Length: 224
Image 1 (tube, rainbow, N blue to C red):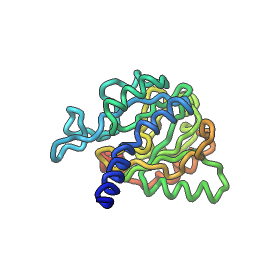
Image 2: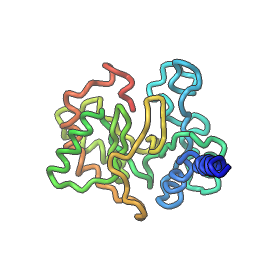
Image 3: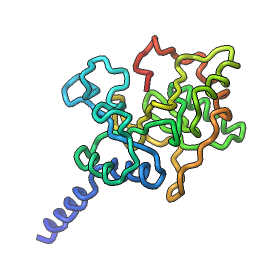
């Protein structure tokens, strides 16, 4: 009898834990003031990696659908309502404005870029990783500022993507149609809003690392 009661207690404890998305979304929205919204998530039918109507979705499960990205918010009540109704929904960050921006590149190129930036002694902010792409979060930048930086480059590979005003990025601990999302470089626990480097500080290393990485046309799933 004692063994049965102990098993029941363990089962109750496991049930209470539940998915981690709500807590993570609240940290982003309330503590860090990063606007978020739920992503569309994985498809529930065999062979469908995205729950959206597009069978050829290039960012399966890792994009907003309903609500759209303009609905992203830092309002605690709305965030709780969204993830209470959809507890396993991916966390989507609306980039730009006062929120972080990001630069993303194929996973192998991302690892090479981080190694080079570490060798240079560069201070980095959070880095988001998926099985196919790594994304470095940076301080908000404008399209004009980004254009000035890229104009000076001989070549900017299309495998390097920019997530600025009007864009979005999936955040941990989401799971999308491409697999799990995790922090390759996590924000310091218990810290205030994570520190972010300026885009100018990292763009050279990311452009260099992206040279030779597969172009978007070679594998559309490299989008995220």
